[in-house]
Amino acid sequence: MRHGLTTRCFAAILLVSMIIDVVLPIQRANGIQASQSTTRYTLQFSSNNSWNFLETIMKYNPRFPGTVGINETAACIESALVDNGGTVIEEPFTVNGVHCKNIIGEWKPAVDDSGQIVILASHYDARARASQDPDPSKRNDTMPAADDGGSSTVILMELARILNNLYNNTTLGIRRETWLVFFDAEDQGNDGNGDGMARWDWCQGSSTMATNIVAFTGNTSRVVLFTLLDMVGGIGLQVNHEMFSNQSLLASFFAMGQCLGYGQYFSSSAKSYYIEDDHGPFIDINIPSIDIIDLDYPQWHTTSDDLVHVSASVIGSVGRVSEAFLLSNLVDSSSLAITDSDTGKTWTASGCTFNNSWFDFTGFLGQYWPYLLLVGLVIIVVTIILHERLRKSQSGQTRHKLARASTSQPPNTGRE
Ligand SMILES: [Zn+2]
Image (cartoon, rainbow, N blue to C red; front, side, top):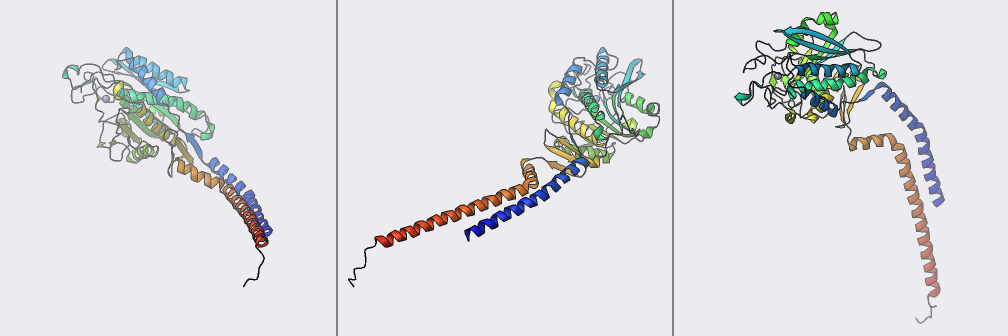
């Protein structure tokens, strides 16, 4: 009876082993197919690198048009582009006798260039006057411009390093060009407390480039996306729903931010504004455009727009969302899975996942369930065998005791 049970148990284990031999290779093959059809990408943006750039350009202050500081900033930007494989194009122009220039860094696919262009842009000039300073005596002072002109510029400078990696990665299949564009002469218009520079208007660099876009591209329709970053490094950042922007693209950027774990900066309940900014001239020539901006930055156009009021963590967060958004617009996003190792979140076109411990546990179960079943069966068999042996030995002892009991009993004396 006991031998029969053990035999059946081992037969069950053998059967499960055979199932494992058949099932696991199928599972592994499916895993390989899945990884072949899904392009997995981990975000590379470094908040430290962008913060180092910010500290560097802040040392060039003041950085408004016509200063030594803006020329030093331009040189710093251009070396970040060139050092990372970007082709630099300058677009010089003059405003009220002051020499200005836009800077463009281009990356093109080595093969299969579709000719389509994705632009990521920032202004790099600082406003000449802190015209909104709460202290009226400081309103003609220059402003540090850590956030306004600083934060977005250093995000693009760090993205240059990442673009170099992306365009050297043949497995990603990038077929679009990326242009990082740094506008001069954005921030000198009248903000209600006077001009930044006398008789200057807003957005003169972007207006100049949009006017000349055919000279750069040959055909305006080549530019399929224009994304502007402006004032994105402030502590307590709340990116606005900017109403001139292409609302569907803006919603995609917000969804990307929320998915990757940065919902506090990309809130569904953020304020909505119509904001005149560098994306305006590109909307006017029918290029799908968005503006990622927080207009409620408390130190806007004040002498306090300094390193104390911006955050490396916020800059890094916006940088990572920008990197993800850019990549999702450079390749076939339906086969893309973008992971942020800082937050443990993964974005795909069909949804978001969170790599927490429960997810790993279910993944582990899914991958190794046949082995776990085998181990469980072995434990059951060993338990049964031990139980049988224990029962046998106990029954032997009982019989022995009974035997001893029967031998030790005094013989019947027949007193009854
Ligand atoms: Zn400004």
